[in-house]
Image (cartoon, rainbow over all chains, first blue to last red; front, top):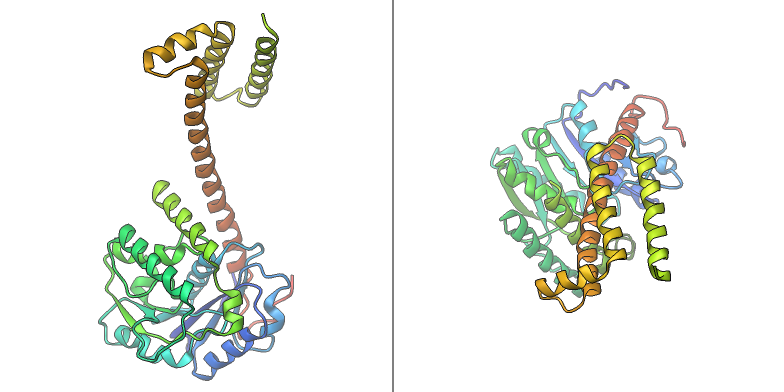
Length: 232
Length: 115
């Protein structure tokens, strides 16, 4: 395993990426500008994403086969632990998250008020244009998460989250695909981690909508969740 | 013996042969299988037994009883398969993750190759 010199890697951003375009490059650049260390986990993209991040000072890991976003996140987390960070942030590769949301997102961690902070698009004061079906599905997802975990959150499946070291060490994602978003909530509950929701802005660009999940995916997520509980 | 009985018995025999060859070592599975085969053969040769059983259980016809029980067994098999698939996926994920961690490249190390 390669050794890395990382005296500055105190705030690490993990970006799971699959078949992304040059949007990934600009996402990485915007994060680098703010001084974050970046781990990009290429989830078996074809062609490989290495061309998009050439010459960028980022950590790059590649799954040799496509496993899903949950698996890519966990790989990123495992790698992040080697960098001995103070906190880790998960960030989407499709440009729908705003770098400027991070400082307020990590504030509860810095003040030691929470172990995990979850981004919520519904707490944001800024009126955002969430597509209608998306809105309905997210409400259903909230309910499902509540049923399974007992925690009622204002948002579901928001990829922008921040974890302190304790949370990073405790949370283990085993759901390879999108059900990992609910699994993280189960893990928070299971380990009794303190969590907080903070408003974040989600940009629904044509690109991110195309890359995002369809309604059919939510059925698959529900199915994965049931199996998750069944074969625990 | 009617045509359908011959057909079904041949099928059962072939499936049995195939599984016995595959499962030579697993005793419990083998015993279970032999019990199932015995039940199948008995029901094929004396279909009236299913009818009598069905009536006792409040099901109209023997064929219906066999049908319902088959659905249950089918569900059981599907669940077993899912459990198996998830198990496989877990090992698969672990292998791929280890490989990715081993080959990680960083800001200070060489350029990632495009394998």
